[in-house]
Image 1 (cartoon, rainbow over the protein chains, first blue to last red):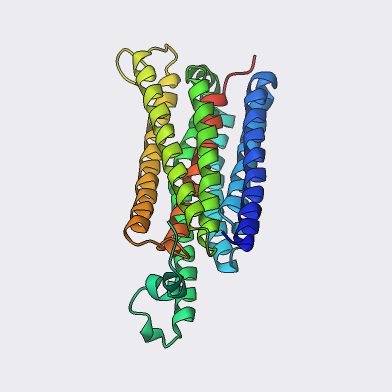
Image 2 (image 1 turned 60 degrees about the vertical axis):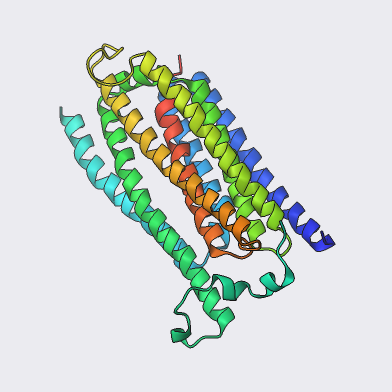
Length: 100
Length: 229
């Protein structure tokens, strides 16, 4: 194996392992928060942690950080339509719940 | 398993799909376009899958808003040890998949690519095995919605309806991912050097990353709710 291959293996592993350690630390944090945080805070904290983990995976494992604009746009489109789906449906659900 | 020099020199020629000559481009350039097209294509697919799972997550959100107390009672019944172990396993497969994808793009790292693909498959299978044990425990505890359901509160059945639906659809996605990675390993075995710069590695690894993300969101929904206090 050449010197160059060894250097690139080291670089690939180092970056990957840092992200992986962060993801596992967030997993431990969410497990702790589920038991230790006040009931009303647990859900926002845990979904916040899950969103952070998902962003880490998308950016650093799925390499959206170095992707073309077109690819980023495709990824953003999924979230955009998802936001519309949630916003319109929850407007209806929440207004019914508030008035019931 | 290492690629011969000839194989590496002819990467574009091996991976390029016909008919490329109609574009009137040089071989290398046509391959670069096709590679970008493959990445763009899988991201379009992932965006459509986001909406597919998004509809399921919306269903959960709407039901949980209405039956928060029952959902907390039901979520306490899921096995947090299996859930957490499976999350750690999937996060580790995400690491292996990302390493495999990056290693496949560099000369001389075929062995690393292959090892990481193998580790991805094994850890993916370990996830399925844990899920299987968990399912059998759930069935023993009468957590299948319907007659003889273990919990009294009516909306707990809605939670477990969602649990079975979401985890089984996720398991189907993961099985497809495992089959795709096994196919890549098989192709490399049949044609040494296949993995080097193959757009197929990146496409499969992006799909794997997406399946990972779905579980990351499912974990707090199914396992962490109702644990406080």
